[in-house]
Structures are given as structure tokens and as C-alpha cells.
Image 1 (cartoon, rainbow, N blue to C red):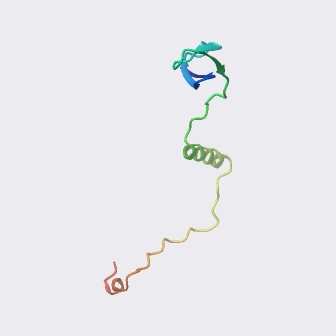
Image 2 (image 1 turned 90 degrees about the vertical axis):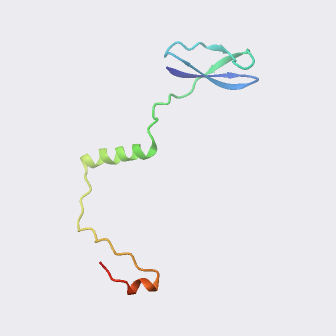
Length: 92
């Protein structure tokens, strides 16, 4: 089902869901019954979340030109104790 947008001069826009290719040029407004003309809008082809799209782009780019490291990553640092009483406790 495709979403088609129509606009009534008095009530504003509304969406109609119909099979692709069956949209009429004029439809009646569900609120007031007046005729409304179809608005042509760009199709909503990309509904992928932004985070997923960027992850896919990075994955695709790494296939052609993988990121190569030149050094070993630094080791994780131990957290610094903020409370002075903690310094007296035994460490693992």
C-alpha cells in the first residue's frame, strides 16, 4: 500500500492509503466532504534509522579500504579513586 497526500482548501492535508497506481487526482475530504487535489511528494524510500545507515556505510567502505592500525592500542587505564579513603583499601 502506498500513502497518497491530498489537500483540502479549508481543512488542510490528509493521507490516503491505496494500492500503487490507484490514486485519483481528486479525493473527498474526510472532515468536510469538499474535493481535495492530490499533492505530489517525494517517495519515502529511505526509512532506515540514521545509526544503522551510517554503520552500513562504514561496513561497505571498510570492504574496499579497511582501516589499518600502525600501533597497538593503549591499555585501558584503571579508574582513579576520588575518595581518599579508598586508597587504604586492598587492591586486586
